[in-house]
Amino acid sequence: MNAALQLSLGLSDWFNLFLHYLSLSLLAVGGAITTAPDMHRYLVVQEHWLTESQFNASIAIAQASPGPNVLFVALMGWNVGLNTGSSAAGFLGVVATMSGMLLPSTTLTYLAARWGHENRGLRAVRAFKLGLAPIVIALLIATGWILTSAHDQAAHDWPLWALTLVCVLLVWRTRIHMLWLLAAGATLGWFGWV
Image (cartoon, rainbow, N blue to C red):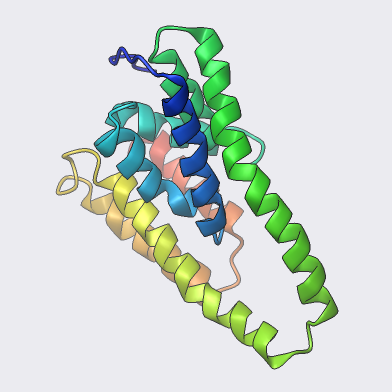
């Protein structure tokens, strides 16, 4: 990753990083990735703790790695710490971001899932589940927009936009498994067609 920044973070900065991820955890309806636009705003635009390339690389590496989707949060904390010039601060960044992201959402999910399961027949519970679907979709679109608009090649990437639209329509309207679409995209990329 590109360590182009040299930061000096105090205890209050680390605590604010933890608090920010604590609040994002409660907004992460649909997974931590849906809060990436606000992470970008906070880490890159407001605080200047990460560069654009570090932010995007954190998400890309975590998405390409096997394991939980939330790994990008740890990578962002790691990069904030490394930008201070210390690998020990990298571990502090991982602890601050991951504990902030996981503690509230894990606790709330556990309690809400128990209550929702016990009351799954209630009309309000079913309406709540149906109402969250458009919110999750909008948050995922916002995340995709942030990730794709970080470089100046949008006009040259029209084949990728078209391929994305085709994949969205195929997933929406057919029963084709997403792994087949990923394999097709990997094949097209391998041959340099997209």
